[in-house]
Image 1: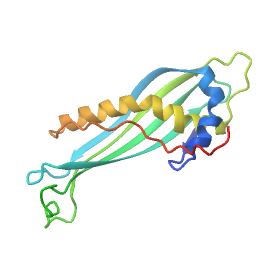
Image 2 (image 1 turned 90 degrees about the vertical axis):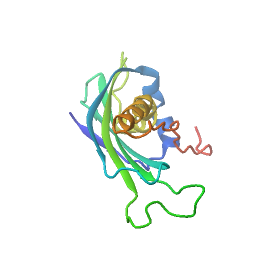
Image 3 (image 1 turned 30 degrees about the vertical axis):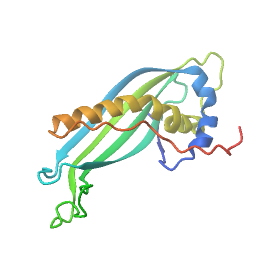
Image 4 (image 1 turned 180 degrees about the horizontal axis):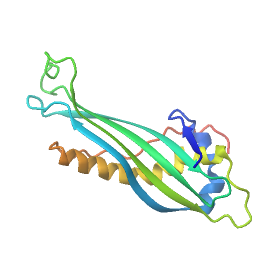
Length: 173
């Protein structure tokens, strides 16, 4: 399959417009967990307050002439000890790294297009779809997986907020 990487800094405002045609003819058929690595770096014994950082990238796989494509989302979660709100003491002042756990995983979604007599999608349309609609479609699965895996690691289940993709309202339609 052809593979097309998508930058996380992609202009999502423009992507929403670029993906409009595919949004009208595409439906999701399957979502799978493709890869997962989770590790506890150290136990958060002395500091029960945890914070997280979630990073993601999207890529699309498409064979020219096919009526389907795959959007892959790669996600990296870093869970760290946080400063106690009642104290000015940083977590584990002796430790140089406050990382408690790391999780990296990949979800993939199969999308099917109702092409009829439409033009095949361009790589620009596919990339735009991956960073906009593709990310939105995968995100509920991502949130559930993060909550589940943190609980299985013996940490409090992490509830990740809703997906917030920067949008520039000044972008003309």
